[in-house]
Image (cartoon, rainbow, N blue to C red; front, side, top):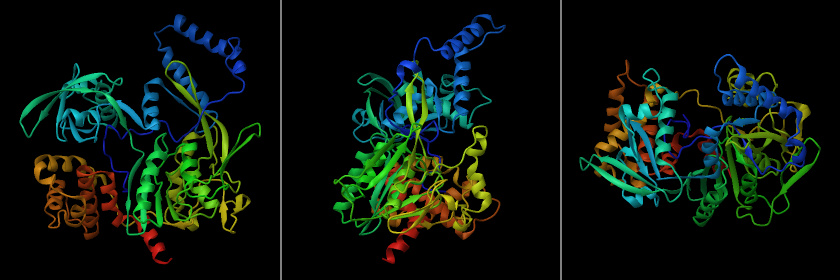
Length: 542
């Protein structure tokens, strides 16, 4: 289990809904041709849709038909040209813009009730007086608990407790809480500590969706920054973390891009600029006409003299690979981990005018040595492309670097003579295998969220007294809470010492995140993080 993979249903933990992407500004040179009202292909599609709508034997949702037609058309192009329906575009846009308009709470569904897990500092709900542990039972005109929320979300009894049902319910809750800036929503909560319902009138406002989930000092000289995605706000968040760590004496930085699916290329370039000297090539793109656009580092870098370790894995893609590739090709720092995803295509977004959009591949990007890291794809075998991770498992490359297949025809050399390869992701300088000894089953870890929430909810006053450093050193030293959790698992046989040790680390980490934040979670789990342990080993040999 990596630090980010455990399921934790937060209102601000909005996933990037449409694959792995790179955003940029759309700039068609031939708009008059592409969007001419006399375009024969456009007329053909319109005529067909009208024919189906008026003359087909049964009633048909032509909007759905058109959506499917567009999606299937794009499938014939490449794996990353995608259609985003209007009911999903808002979610995607919010995630990439790094903010949404709402009341500023994180929640989970607990016993069919919206339970507030945390209130965002400085947000509308904190100002209004909401607290962690409050159960939101009414939002505006909507009752959002029990059968009522199930009905509101359109969840049938047969769907209940499935992934899709939980998604529908979460969407329904967010729809009830979100709205336009400066509008108000009347909230009724049940506060268990007072055993009564309380009413609040909350004015909605912009709420940040963090993309830099944590930053802290691992030791006196080694800092850590985690970037979840490259959103519009990511550089500003990153710079705040970088400046803070530099002020604390950081000499080396761990930049964690594991599981980061990408985002805006210009944001990634700005972050790379903090590490590279003036004039160094960061990345270049090339379109079908052979037009090349290059990005170079400037003089403004604040960590040009520092050591950088970039952590990547099989889910690091797109803008993450631009960062890793730029630093690797410029002989800056060390790439640690496993081969990255392998996405070397650049998309641009076009609004289709009805709330939906298309992200179309318009160019390829290349690292400073000239390599494309796009892995091979077949226009007719998208499933094979999506399941390439399974091939990595089967060929053993998640366990051994020697199992990574390279093409000698795609061999490149960095300025200092290091051999690097194109053709399918960034191969790390220092390989770290997956942990085949430690297994994280859903049976052991699937109930952590509910257990932690319930325990804190029953001991809020006592748990609120913990301070982070004291928590990291002393929480549950007698294992009473661990034993309580294990007891409720009703296992057939005792846990092995290793599984028990791992479970304790992640149980404590879930408590840390609930009581503090994602930084606390990372601090607790780093003692079991194989990549960070490898970095510490490398640091000791400097």
